[in-house]
Image (cartoon, rainbow, N blue to C red; front, side):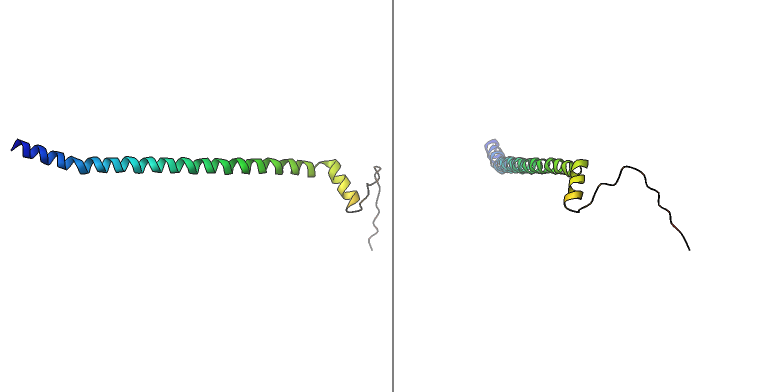
Length: 93
């Protein structure tokens, strides 16, 4: 009788062990997939940071006073005003 219970115990352990093995493989695969996705996201983050830095540099270049003055005179045909203050008199009716 003892041998029968031992056989039943061993036979009952097989599905448990197989289930644990499958769980181990599934969790391991989920961790590997998350690691790959994380690496992809880090690559995207690095690309976006590089693009942001390039845009900041371009913004700094475009908003420099000497660049704005050059653009105003060359593209918009604006002229520098006289540095002396002027008085404007308005006659109202």
